[in-house]
Image (tube, rainbow, N blue to C red; front, side, top):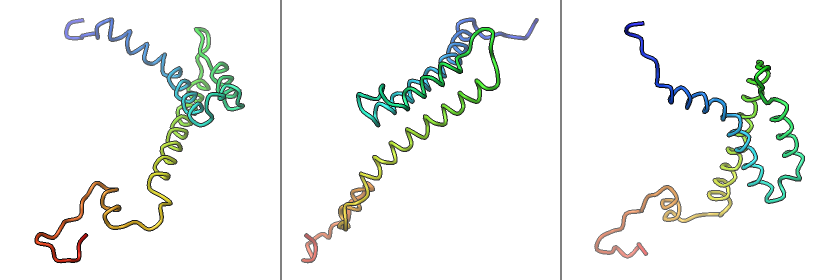
Length: 126
């Protein structure tokens, strides 16, 4: 048809491959978070067995394409987001919490600022 342009074949293939690899990326991401939480023995945990079982159960074949697969993919993506957010929260919590009273200089440096100094020395600054 005149005036209609189709995307090049290699870009169609790339988008199809990205769509097919997305559940695999989510699975790898979840396993990465489990490894960060539990250490090298994460493959012996119940969480690992459950995640692998669910991904195997919802694997798409050429004959089966259903709404449950989409829901399972969405739930797994949400779970990956929860695991990553929890890990990031713990890192931030350990960084900024529980150090007791802080001096104004320490507080300013936490947010990337410096307190001004008095030129000439008034005697009260350090």
